[in-house]
Amino acid sequence: MKNQRKLKLIQSYKQVVDQVKKYELELNKKIRIVLVSKYQSVEDIQHLYDEGALHFGENYVQELIFKSQKLPSDIKWHFIGNLQKNKCNEIIKKTKNLHTIETLDSLLKAVKLETCKRTIEGKKIKIFLQINVSNEITKSGFKYDNEEDIQKTIEFLLSEECKFLKLKGLMTIGSLNNSLNNNSLNEDFHILSELKKKMDKKYGVDLELSMGMSNDFLSAIKQGSTNVRIGSLIFGARTEP
Ligand SMILES: *Cc1c(COP(=O)(O)O)cnc(C)c1O
Image 1 (tube, rainbow, N blue to C red):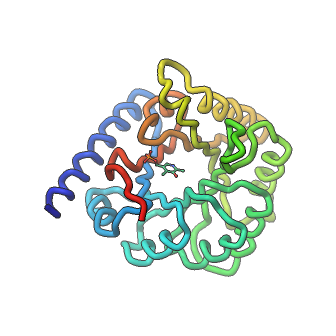
Image 2: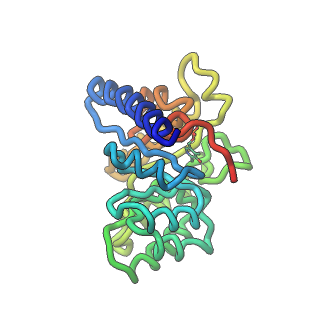
């Protein structure tokens, strides 16, 4: 049974890798696959790591810290959950090899993370600004049309003052409706890539786009994604504890 689980995981992982590789060749660019491992076991993550997977994404701070301390230290951990103000310290101090925070949603938190990171060793932490492209109040992130706050945060991340965080890109969670309605352009991904173009031009940068999950990663890649976050397609349906 255990062995079957492992074989299944590896097979689904390789299928995703093959699909993404095809687009990398076609579009001539690198696309990162982040394996979303929330609620998944340390053993399963280890199996995929043994197959060469290095980027894993977690949603909950305690779970991230626990797994990062148990698993190989060269795993590049992405935090993709709701970032709470009072967890900024802990996530920086206790996560082993925290690579990327994909869900920054305020200038205040950027300042907090920067201040805290100053006190510990290690590489810069990569940052994506989470953008709420649908303006659903249930979703976190900067409202996509709140350019003032987005710009202030980008300006802080690019400033001399900010030494330990590195601006990497923009991230969004597409609405389920737009992802199931996959006849043509996904409106959510379109909004995010338009915002990227605008910010690239204004700041002379080349922001990455983190968009696309199990349901919609191929259309996200077609619309410019460079970082896809894939959970259930590889691990199977999640059972919440
Ligand atoms: C859970 C989660 C994913 C993965 O979703 P799947 O549909 O299982 O691929 C991706 N991104 C975020 C932000 C998530 O919370």
